[in-house]
Length: 307
Image: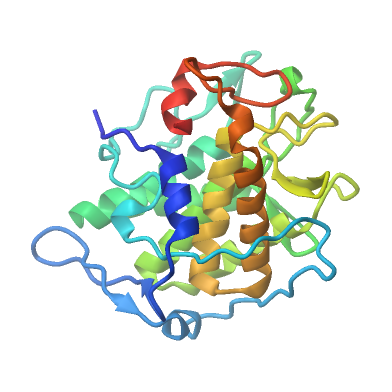
């Protein structure tokens, strides 16, 4: 089994420690030792390899924004990195490219969140081993996400094709959870390959976080009581799922650290402000933390992720 990653402590580390000046982890070629070396590279060197769209912060901001010092985490400290290596053998329920699908009502559907999360781990498996089969697995998943997505006002949304009645969602619906994982995948693929198509894809996915709901359609984040919420299930009654919020937040973190875009920085700080204000709401002293704030479900599987 891979090592257990506790993501809330990582979140606090991101918030509280000052970034090293001009430092961004960067790509390098695999070494003969079987892994990819990572070296510091100035932000401008990364951005100059492609056209990264700069967005302006919302003004006036419709949500609370607190000022934080953001640290650039080393590769091994990034969320989802350092887990067990991905299996190269395709799972039983998968297509000809080895991408898994789920069966709902006797029909096959792709789950964008699963595809993107697996893609992130494939990139990390490549970095740790130098085995290009892992990189190929990440590329295939990025391509699948593009093919499943649609563009609205310049933003790439990757929808789920099945209904989710538990949260009152009818297909096609989108999720900050899967958008965040997809954002991390495209950013990390760019950091590994330096190929501008992945930076462009990351920018398109990031723009989905700027189309605040619920007035816009589709939407994955909205403002309630002055707080910016990143919603795994953006329904008529969003449930504020904790793990979905934080994985979306980590996608914003990856993109902000790559681009240093002012608009991305504002959304990251606003998301951090929301989580710092409400983290205690999920705690149940002496028991399993809450999965969400509306249904107040307690699921043992998610507690180690929350803690």
